[in-house]
Picture 1 (cartoon, helix red, strand yellow):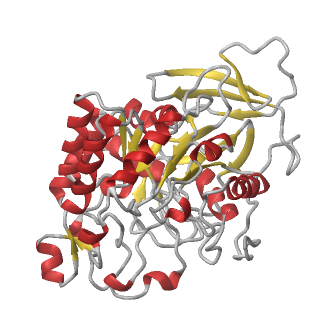
Picture 2: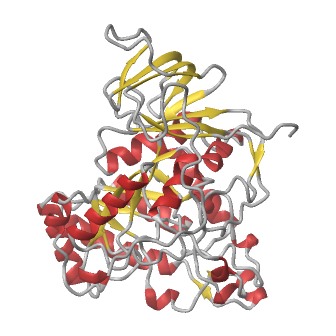
Length: 459
């Protein structure tokens, strides 16, 4: 039964509203003055941006009918970018509200510049009916922050036995279908699922993970896992199911998005499939671009993730694939946990970390380090996921687009700590990391939903 979430003791409305715009009121118009406007298409200019009725009304000269008393935000010395689209984030509701809720996590999202969250179907109950999708949409509307869109289940109950009603889920607003990391029982059923999805032009999100090869494992198979005495997961746990999918895919006509790549070998398979003209795209988790098996600690589960953190060679291959476009977009793979879930020794902890607060800062840190160009980074967080998941109104800065935008201070110099981490899950390996770029304010559908609080006097 779907229940209302408990009160987690988190302030859900720390928004400072502008003069003339009362709390809880959706302002019809905004002027963002003098910001450096950037997006993944290569746009880079200092220009005024006019927002009205949830859309970007104009850039440059004001529309003739733009209200003179519209709230004004000074963007000089700052960047204005399209709101980030995070295409794989678990918000724990419905079913695990003791970990987090849609309200708490959409707050963390907009504070980190994320305006659209795409939610996988492994909720409780499983998102295999339109009723569950509507419930999630309603909870997000009540929270009033980030837009939440859903991915429906590929099979009923994610059990891998009977196909879900993909056409109905798509008509009900789901932007794709997936069995998450859970296996489909046999290749015949997988092929039928792909053919069914192709019939209705529904995107299939596939996370390659073989349960027999990864069973009871928690760390990358290699010298580090051996030295620490940790049960391991080989690279073949990713490449074996991926190779099977790629063998079947050409016979079905389906569009497939490969989610959460973690290995050099997996990247090579995707690169070859793209070269062969298969209709596939791919994503990588942001933590896989920064961490490796070297960060594994047998006594601390903070870096316990699935797929596991792999070798430095794998990390380098993932970075190169993202820069070249073999990997299309970057996800947070957000999985907030209660504190107790991470207190045991590494193998006994629950996998997953909280990633909403750090997705954008870590991406821009890659730009600072010369790994990515700024347009490529914004493309991987905006225009590419928008194109892949059919969000035609998001991901770019242009008149007529949905006014989901984020104002960034490029030289904020801040540290991730208990005060700056807003997710209900405190499970992140990036505590204590220093960042340069920070979201200053965020608008969703033309409404300013977050403003960075002023620092205390004397700080």
